[in-house]
Length: 86
Image (cartoon, rainbow, N blue to C red):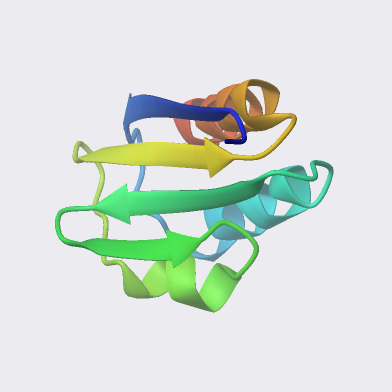
């Protein structure tokens, strides 16, 4: 079984084009598969369009879930981007 990691993040801004692009660029630097979950929906952290389609607004909580060899580092890096990108 490959390692996995989950981190909850309260978004300071809606998950629009700029933060989605930053997430995609960050996730691309890892081998792990990274998903962002919002309610019952999820999207790959490697697809800006799918991330924006989640409809996650400022102040809502999303979960970053990663699986793979570098999952803890990938989840932490994507979570940090979500916390700081506006």
